[in-house]
Amino acid sequence: MDILSSKLNSEIVNIGVRQGSEERVLFELKKTKDLDLAIIFHCPSNFLFLPGCDRDFKLDSNFHNRAAYIWNINEIQDISDKLGFHQEHHKKFIEKFQTISKFVQAMTNFKAYFFDPDLIMNRYYGSLIQIDQYLLAKKINVIHVVSRRLPLPDWFKFQSGIIDTEIAELTETYKSASSDWFVNGITEEGNIIIADKLYQLIIDNGYVK
Image 1 (cartoon, rainbow, N blue to C red):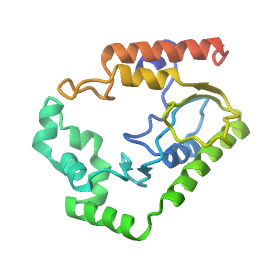
Image 2 (cartoon, one colour; image 1 turned 90 degrees about the vertical axis):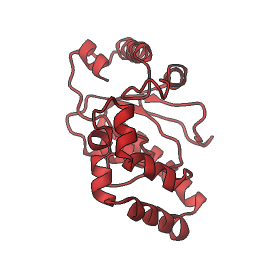
Image 3 (cartoon, rainbow, N blue to C red; image 1 turned 180 degrees about the vertical axis):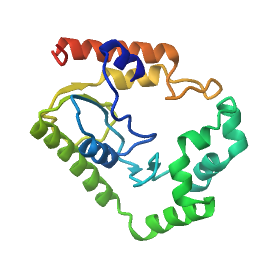
């Protein structure tokens, strides 16, 4: 996004969160003002929207292991060259849940009492439809980045903007190694290639004058 905004001489007004959910996309989209162009990386259906946090959470992950990663200060600082990764990127998450045990208990209770696979998919489909309809109603230019692996129903088709499936594949091709940590999990080369691809889509479709 930094590379692209520089090429377009534009301002970034929202960058989303790590492991975002489709409900998060809808939430952030509706509250973002002065939006001329939205670039939406659509999400898998197995992420849970966590209001007030700076990340969402994968429902089928091991709660204990993921919580240990987020709260393990020494390990995370080592990975990020001692930049305090957890403080910079998980601050709101840690402030909300306070401790590993509180987070694990909250997720355990959710899975035990409020989780149903059909309900999760209904919420996912509902978010997709509302995102699409909101963009149409507000006449917002949009690029939908869609992975071929997403569980999109055969009865749903985007009516707004441009749909691209190549960029999602590029994020996998240029995924950075865990030993070579980078801010968005994509190599520096991959970031340049993806920014150039997005730039060309924007220009080819007349989204900038």
